[in-house]
Image (cartoon, rainbow, N blue to C red; front, side, top):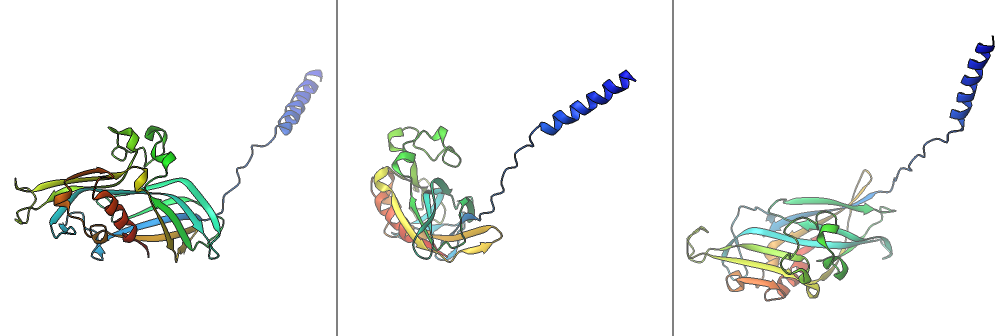
Length: 249
């Protein structure tokens, strides 16, 4: 009888102790919609074809081997012009040679009333001069930072490729020339502000943007440009053209 009482008391004690253990905290579910930015690329209003030959602003036939730009620092505003959300660390690298259409989730917003999107082409000075190894993807991806010239920071806009100098219709002749334009430094940051008609999905507010690359190349002679770095010509004009090339769908 005494053994049975001891066992019963032990079971009772264990049950009482387990009842005193606080339950695991339940993380609250964030039901706010996500702001997503979708970017589509075109040339002469047609979907961007990475294998195609294009014309620069001087009529030279060109083919791209690298084509990228950085957009960052997104700020969402409502119909009254009030800021509803800011994402100072947000950044996306657009590469139409890899993706004709690319979408990135920027962050949570408290409302679906997002009618204007402000951001910069490039990076603000603090991010531009941060150690890329400490930054999240895509800023830590190889090729986006000027490793050999850290003081210049990141490459805001990159154009590399070949010019068909002799008009033979290919880009493999000895006469053909290469071009490299890496636009960078704090001086070339360009702000942009776009009115939106956002696409509303399930828990998503989608800002649809378009980049028209024929506008980026207006007035640009890539045969003359050769190799242009930082703020060398035609980099300032390329960044100005990029502002004009980005629009809301």
